[in-house]
Amino acid sequence: MSLKSKMPLQVWILTLAAFAIGTAEFVIAGILTQVAESLNVSEGQAGHLITAYAMAIVIGGPILTLWLSRYRKRVVLIGLMVLFVASNLITAFATDYTTLMISRVMAGLTQGPFYGIGAVVATRLVTKDMEGQAVGQMFAGLTLANVLGVPGGAWIGNMFGWNTTFIVVAVLGAMAAAAIAIAIPPQGAEKPKSIRSQIGAFRNPQLLASLLITTLGWVGFMTFYGYIAPIAEQVAGFERASLTWILVIIGLGLVLGNTLGGKTADKNLRASLIGWPAAMIAALIVVGLVASQPYLFVAAAFVFGVVSFANVPPMQMRVMKHGGEAPELAATANISAFNIANALGGIIGGAVVDSTLGAAYIPFAAIIVPALGLVFIVWQERNPAPAPTKA
Image (cartoon, rainbow, N blue to C red):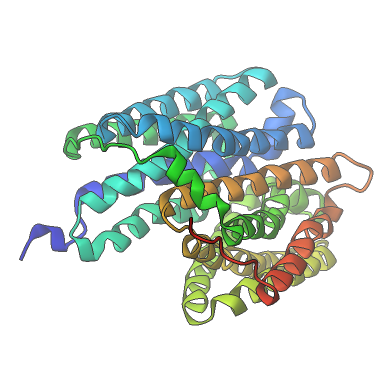
C-alpha cells in the first residue's frame, strides 16, 4: 500500500499554517477591549482592525494569487509565511493605532493566496481519491483556530497582555514556515490559465447571485462575533477572564455547525440555503433578548455558533456548483465574499457599540443585512436567473 493512502505529515503542516493564519484573523474578537484601552481608542475603532484585515483579503487576495501562480508553490508558501510572521511581530510591538492598522493589512494580504495555493499543494501530496480530504484537513486549521486559537489568544492576552498574543501567533507562523521549508518537496509552477477565460465564469448570473448570497447572509456573523467581548462584559456582566471559556463554547458550536451544514447541504442544498440563515437570524434575536442573563446568553451564543457556521458549506457548494470553467477562481471569489461580509460586520458592530445604543443592541443590528439576504435567497431559489448561453 502506498504511503500516500494515509494523510501525510506535510498536509498537517499546512493545517498548522492555516491554524496560525485563522487565529490571527479572528483573535482580535477576544482581545478587542484590551486593544482599545491600550491604544486609547474606542471599541468601534478597534473593531475597524477587523474590517481592514478583511478588506486586505478581499482586494489583495485574488490579485496576489493570480500574480504568484507563476512561481514555485513551496517558495511562495514560505514567502507568504515570512510576511505573515513579520506582520504579526509588527502588530505585537505596535504602540499606535496607525502602525497596528498597517500591520493588520499586511497580515491579511497573506491569507487568500496561502489558502488558495496551499489547497493546490495539499492535493498534490495525496492520491486522487484523497484530494478532497486533504483540502478539508488543511481548512480544519481554520475551524480549529476558532475553537482553540481565539480563546487561547484571549487567555494569553488577559494573562500577559494582548501584545503577547500576537508574538505567539508569529511563533506559530515561524514554526509552520520552517516545517514547510524542511518537509514539503519542491513543486513546479503551472502555466496560468487565461485570465480572460477565468473571468468569463462571472458572466453566469447564478454565480454572481451565489456570491451575493454569501455576502448578505454572512454579515450577521462578524457583526456579533467580532464584538463578543464588549457584549459579554458590558451587557452579560462577565469578568474579562471569562471570555476565554465563552469563546471555547462558541467555537465548539462553530465546529458542530460546520458539520451539520455539510450534511444538510448534501441532502438538500435549497433547504439549507434558506433554513440556516433563518435560524441564524432567530438565534441573534434570542441572544439580544437574553443578553443580560449571563448563562442564558452563553447558551444562546452557542446556538448562534452552530447555526451561523452551518451556513458555510451550503454557501460554498452553491458557488462551486455555478463556478463553471473556473471553480478555483470562484472559490477565491467566495473567500472575498465572506470577507466583504466580515468587513461590513466590523463596520456595523463598530457603529453600534460606539453609539448611544451601545453593545446591547449589536445582536439586533446584526440581523438587518442577513434578513435582506434571506429575502434574496428565497426569491433567487424560486426565480433562478438563467444560465449564460454558450458562445
